[in-house]
Amino acid sequence: MNERSIKYSINLNFEEIKLPPFQDILIVGKNSTQGKIGLTKSFEMLIPNGFETIDIIDERVETVFVNKHILKKMPAEKVLEILNKNVFPFISDGELIRVDFKINISIENLEVTSSEL
Image (cartoon, rainbow, N blue to C red; front, side, top):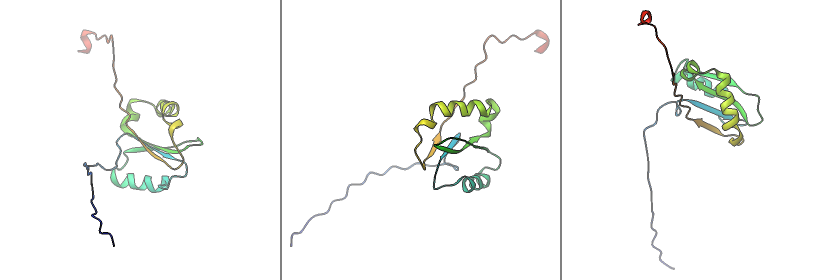
């Protein structure tokens, strides 16, 4: 019988996570094992009233969860338009996709009268 020496090589990375494990947007693909109802209940327990649930009519996407802070800055229709053009085409059946959606607002040539100061 041959004696073999077994050697293990392990790479280990870890980091702290926050719950829920996304901050901005979560896209639920069609046929995802994590369903919309279960995810909605989980989010309500973790961050009550923190996310808007938007059902989608698309062959790849079932639902989108959007942080309500985003919707205070931009209408849901515009957010969905951006996602539909830039993210939805890359979603596969059953996937959950976390989207970092950072908004930077810039106001130029703002005029203020002395009575407004």
